[in-house]
Length: 127
Image 1 (cartoon, rainbow, N blue to C red):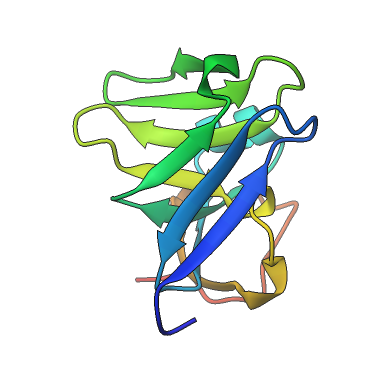
Image 2 (cartoon, rainbow, N blue to C red):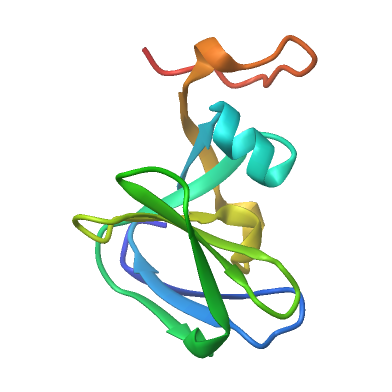
């Protein structure tokens, strides 16, 4: 991706959309038990510390999943929209939510020690 690119995405029903600006094509994979319970498998996420602009935000509900983070989803269709740190507003968005999925590359895996044995990814976990 190199230069800053505007990327759009939307939930399944389209009532919530998102626009972000990024200069990275990196995807992180979280294998923690909460992410797996939330999505039925690991979370493939794109992280943003800055501008994440939601349209239709009145249709977003949040769940406080820990003391430090919350998860957002569409009230209408249930699509997972984000994992957000409460203190600094750092976002992790599911990469499948965003358009242009072919440009992304897995560069990091976290909580690899919690990954169950029934799946394996070809990419090497970060140290």
